[in-house]
Amino acid sequence: MQLERILGGIAPLAERPPIGQWTPELSGDMDLLIARDGQWIHEGTAITRHELVQLFARILRREADGHHYLVTPVEKWRIRVEDCAFVVVEASFDEGVWSLTTNVGEQVALGEQHRLVVTATPTGEWIPQLDLVHGVAARLGRNVFYQLVEQGESRQLSGGTWLGLESDGHWQPLGNVEADE
Image 1 (cartoon, rainbow, N blue to C red):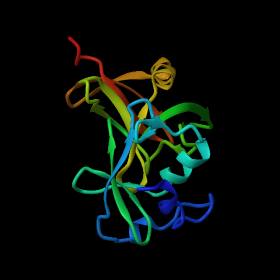
Image 2 (tube, rainbow, N blue to C red; image 1 turned 60 degrees about the vertical axis):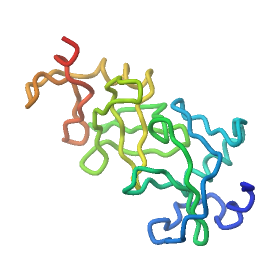
Image 3 (cartoon, rainbow, N blue to C red; image 1 turned 90 degrees about the vertical axis):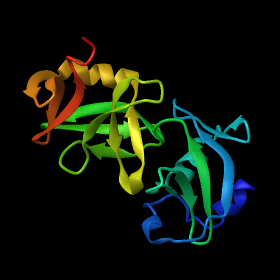
Image 4 (cartoon, rainbow, N blue to C red; image 1 turned 120 degrees about the horizontal axis):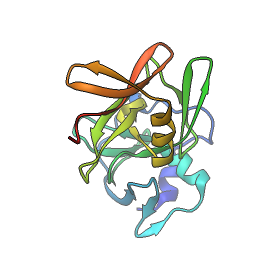
């Protein structure tokens, strides 16, 4: 499978295409891996063109079967993802709202629509992830995690004492303080 074939069905970088409306049949499996660190690897070679990764990220979705797919109006290719498809690499705080930026440049504001959820990585570490559109998620990068932990506060919630923070009036969990005891 040539990557250029998929690129032919995608508009230039702009707003996200309506991939939720596209329902092509499965074309097959593509030898494309999104590594735990956010690196995209095609046929054993890292994709180094950031613009190409951004373009593919716009047509990525995770379906109910748990698999990730690159989807165009006429093709659907299953790919492998080691953990979450993206990594949160930056965080900023302004007027009560935390904004997070992924490794592909997508920015989201933590709040009612975008929340952190603490889940296990494939290696068993419990780290927050950010759910994004079309079923994909971004794992907090280590530097962002520690930045948010420094601003966190403890709360007694069901399941024990949790560390987290407020963003846009909504509690965002960072981890269960008692989980490691």
